[in-house]
Length: 166
Image (cartoon, rainbow, N blue to C red; front, side, top):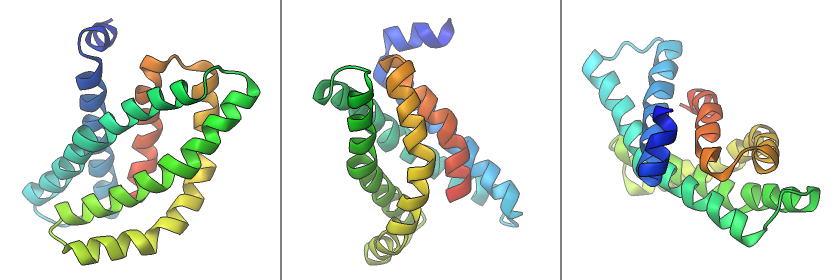
């Protein structure tokens, strides 16, 4: 009820904040799995930087992207869903993966050149893996999940995906 109320009152901010929280939690989880020996302040700083990327970039981008897909390809029939999944994997997927690598590297203090180089190296292998995760998620989302909840569902899956990537 609280989440639904926030979605109605402030849909954009609610989706952005939810994504930010998801990113903080996924990064803290990844650090725990890594056995990070960095000081607590450094670990928290890294998680907060990742959370800021989620709140300021990923959440708003996903909210807009899901609306664009519904506008560009209306409906939830098999052909519409297939077209949306294809759009998601061929347009949004590579863009999101590249931008995430660049933003994460820049937020960690890497140079622009190094950040772009990392994105170029990591895009293809990460995108190939992402297709196996996100294609079924998008198929289910586009078929069963109302538009206003798609970012929340993506955040749930993203917790595991981002923990893996971090």
